[in-house]
Length: 82
Image 1: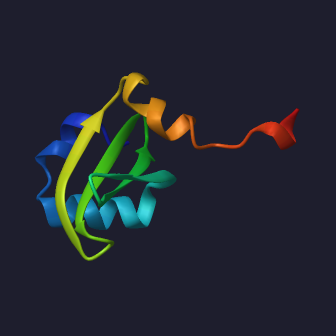
Image 2 (image 1 turned 180 degrees about the horizontal axis):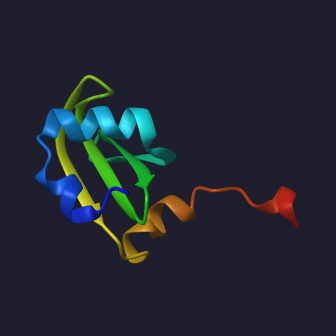
């Protein structure tokens, strides 16, 4: 089982490889013209900030809290579930 701490000990390249292989895609959004993609892995979330879409990852932000999920939840259409 991958923990948040163990994930943070990986190199950025290893983190991205693991996300692409085992992470669950949650959504994407644009902030100041740049793309951010959110993944879930085990019991935590990783937001990848891209300098160039899906080519150059600038930063990875890891968290457990659901508060940073808010911008992604606003974009999900749940009307068909009702």
